Image (cartoon, rainbow, N blue to C red; front, side, top):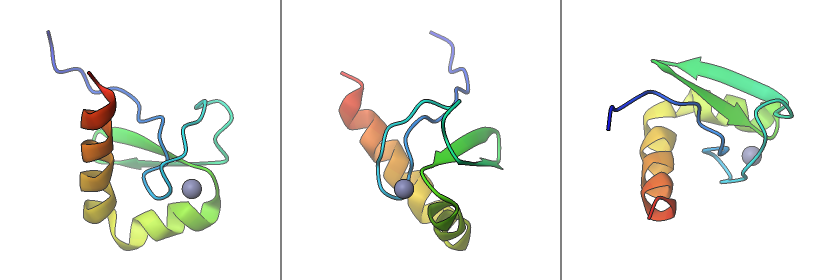
Length: 65
Ligand SMILES: [Zn+2]
């Protein structure tokens, strides 16, 4: 299966799942788009993106069975 870059639908800061069309804040970092429940969490992500990317990656791994 190809390792296609897909959109991240989980707020990496608080872990909230959301529909990308409803996300109030979006940030493109590297090749991916990250969605946030609020501008506050977007700003938090921007302060420490590597930490939250790694966190999101771990949470994805747990959810993908
Ligand atoms: Zn959030």
